[in-house]
Length: 251
Image (cartoon, rainbow, N blue to C red; front, side, top):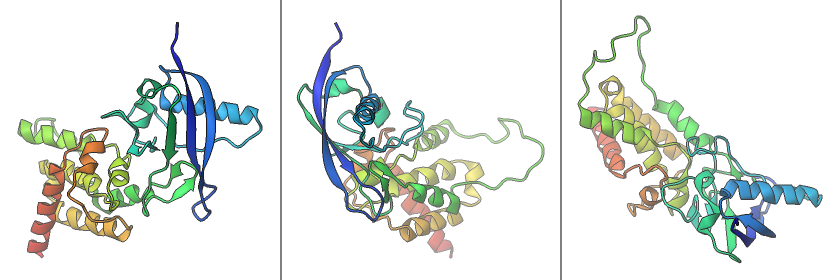
């Protein structure tokens, strides 16, 4: 027999970035513990629509832990009480029968609320546009092994590239810093020979854009690494700082 739970939801409702938001309380019964958190929100919205009420707006896309869209702050933690997962990978078995679950959007000046639980994360896209790329000459495609790359460098670059840009690091940081995100995007290119050509320009441009968009300074508490669903290491922040200092010394 399928196990179910009854829960109470306190969900943040906010019509637009400038309006005053508030929590609204909902009750859900007989929720399967095998449901994902987003499936539970789908059930809530179906219930609200049947009652003639406005559904809760939240962001999602792949529901496979890849896209980083499902940015929810659940019971005081980005992506909820499970470790190393995004919200779409969180299941209701992590909650208890009769529990009250508080659901909020990311809290950051750089991520303004669009509506309810959906936030505008275009700031990350602007940081990438500032320098998160490599310039290459078009022409014949070189052989895959034309540029030998040591395995430890390739592994570290792949680990950094696992960042999905969900923003959990920003939500977890008391200063709303984007250092883990920026350092991951800088590291994945700086570790490879293809990315070394523009490395100085990249570090300066991406940090300048990060500051311009209103992200805070790194707190050095490690909260970003602890809440990252992809286990991106804060060692990347040290690499970003080195890249930035070398760039300034070059100037």
